[in-house]
Length: 244
Image (cartoon, rainbow, N blue to C red; front, side, top):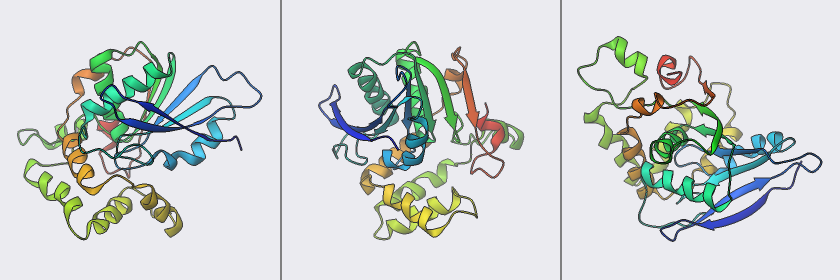
């Protein structure tokens, strides 16, 4: 197992963000794999992937603002700000030709980043289990909803995201874990995921709301780099939409 180190950098709006880094001990680590966890989830969630990938690559796992050991501020919990935070990380480390593995909200961050800054610094992109649009347009047919992968209805959004502000917010978090893991997931594995949900509840409410309201279908048309879409038939989202 390679040693995982902690590092920090500052964003252009003065927020201190944390990331984990591991590099192979015997091979050239000029190639970098950047891991972007889901919303509300800290960089530690990728501990096994870091261990595996760092045998061959330099691996970085980002703690988004408000997550893990990154600074807990009271502003900026939206996809567009996270996209700029990603830009600040790539700039700070002078990263080019990076392979990005983006899970769930991480996908929205990358899409917004590409919309703002292009994808010249990205060599390859791996999108895991989030479609480009999440919010259902009531005029869409069932076939269109399936093709787009969207599942959320406008009248229900605040009911969901306000759940983070309730006294029993842990019930919502546990429900999220239950519906996003397989029946084979053990209690220890689910407890580990819950332990990785380190974002303040008020920030989670803002972030989930903003993410659900995004639509990046037009950004998909801009992608000229190699992209791998990963999902499953038992995913929360219709798999047809996740694979674009």
